[in-house]
Image (cartoon, rainbow, N blue to C red; front, side, top):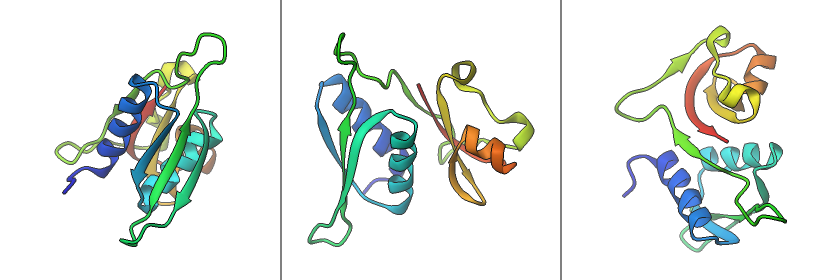
Length: 133
């Protein structure tokens, strides 16, 4: 049993990048699906597919993205910010800028999961889940 599914998601992707895997499978949930869509929209992963499994949970298959010349991963770091023992909330005026705008922060808002840029456009704050750069 996983007590922190977001940390599990980030750890699976981080481990797959270190092992130079091209594809990683992750147990699905609506939260993880939306995180995957945000990563894809911001160009951090190549593609993704939501698949059904016999146990009805489903899985997310993510194709990781690497630099074509240097073969280094596009995702340099995945950092969990808010965790079950210490939640981090922020309002729209104090939304974090990751690497001065080069990275993204994933924010859980009242309008769903958004990147920090989308949250600024929607003028909402929320719980800062993770930083990706």
